[in-house]
Image (tube, rainbow, N blue to C red; front, side, top):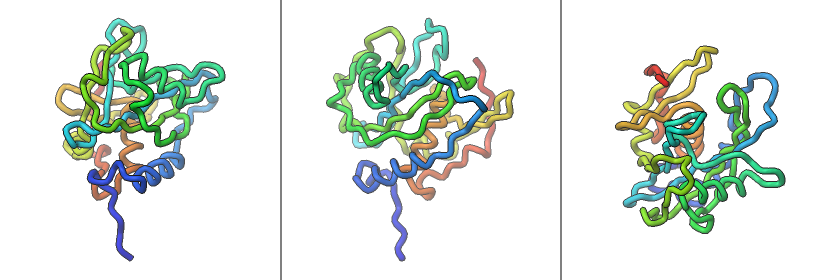
Length: 215
């Protein structure tokens, strides 16, 4: 039987989308004991920039009390009687001005424990076709910068590392130019790439090189 390869050329196809969500929902999630009651959701914004499939990230403002200056996805706390999808659409518009009608939601993965197991974070995948600068406006003081990274760069082993935390837990890190993607954002990035691409495209060699994260 011929093997089907899911690569960058068909990442926006319905077949790739279905493969991605099916794999994403089967994601093995780490557990640290008691599940926290606080919940949040983040959007994994897959977009096309200059015909290159890319992922959009934000840099959190330096005046924030937590995770300041770090690379993150748009998102925030899930309000009562609000779904994860509703949360990411609301928060994405609030943070970077991207309207909900510009985002095509693919689906969501299982909740993942955030830093220090204080919150559960649900990743939601959505795509933005032909993202333009005028689609974005930094609005609420939580975000210092918005940028995109071509997925082909995230797939290059030379940009893949790992870091080990004091509790022994190991997570991937992506370092591309001045941007260092780590923590839950890097784990979700890795999970998305592993879910949507075959391993001949995303070679997933981040366990071979260690990097120290300085905060």
